[in-house]
Each structure stands twice: as C-alpha cells, then as structure tokens.
Picture (tube, rainbow, N blue to C red):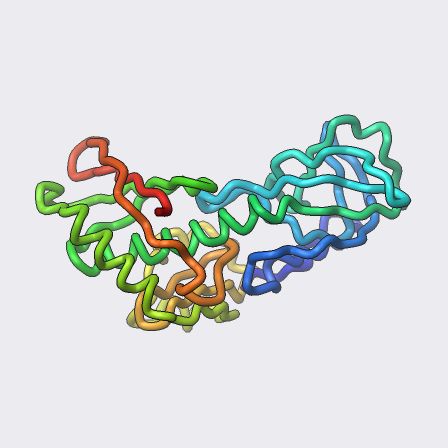
Length: 251
C-alpha cells in the first residue's frame, strides 16, 4: 500500500481511502482546510478517492457548522488530493469542515472496479489478452484488451466465466507488500508500470480476488464477489492491431 501520509511543503495529508477496505459506504468525515489552490481546497485528511486507474474521483458536499458550504466536484489526484469546489473564497486555512461523499456513486464505482479486475483476469487466463486500458462507470464500463489474435474473442465465454466468479462468494483482500514481493510473486499481474513509481515508495497496495486476480491497485473494492451484480456484454470495437474495446454493464 502506498504510504497514505504525503508531505507537501510543511503539510501532512492523510489519504484515508488507501487504508480503508472495503471501499463501499465511505463515512462522512471531519477535517480541516490546510490551503487552497486555484479552484481546489486542500484538506488535512480525506476519505475521498481521486480520479485514477480508470475509476472516477468521488463527488459530494462540504459543510461548515452543519450548513452546506459547497458542492464537491470530481476529486483529482496529486501530491495533495485536490477537492474542486464552486468558490474557494468561502474557505479559509484552519477552517473545520465536514465532507459527505456521494455514497451511491462511490458504491457503484467500487463494485464496477472489482468486476473489472475479474473481467481482465479472466480475459488473460482464457486468451492471454492483456488489459491495456479501462474506464469504469457507475452503470457501464469498458476494457481495452490486447490479443495475439482478436478473432478468438468470445463474449459469451467471457461473461459466463465472469458471472461464475461473481456468484462464487470469493473474498476480496487488500495487502501492503514491498516491491520485491510484488515483482517476484508468480501470480502477480499488471506490474509493467512499476518502473514509473519512485524508488522511495517501498510498499504498494495490492488487491487480491482469491485464486482469481492479484495486482497492485489503489482503487476502491468490494469485500466479496457476492456483492457484485452479474454482468452482461454490451458491445465491442476494434481499436487497432490486436486490440478490442469490450463494453459491459451490470444486469
């Protein structure tokens, strides 16, 4: 798991989404404004998930003294997580605020993200297809798959296998592992990006769907596959040599 305490100058921010699993039902949380930047508020601590890994950032509302003070627009990544607001002038350093994340939206993305891990793992296991891109939505998602021969793709086989896993009551676990363990684990997937992570980050967050998928991931996830609705195939697009963009949604 990436260290959830990140320095920005003299400011220490707790990125609490990294340590909380499952990622569903994020609680309202009290925090303090430590700065502003353009149209962003910087918070001392935050449960908000910032856009990344194909998963949209959280949205919600900010309150001061029990009264709404601003909508919270899609949260963005950075050394300090960025909380976009309507008007930063209503915030001041040291101000105590409460953040309420849009729980329904977060929960939908959480279930979709775990389903995408299963989707990608099964595609690799059946055809050796590598996931080279993805976009998660609240009601539908897409995965870009790279095949040696994309003509072998069978959507029915993929969906049936994914739904079998979803219905198998499998636990989803989150670990904090060091780089060596990650790179040397024989079942670890999606490690090509590891060289882009600074060497100063010695441990990473790893998500495991037991006996199905194991990979580094900072996204939010369900605690068990049984929480995920079954999926159905909605279409495919050719995206160049060997590439298919496969779309699906929850039933």
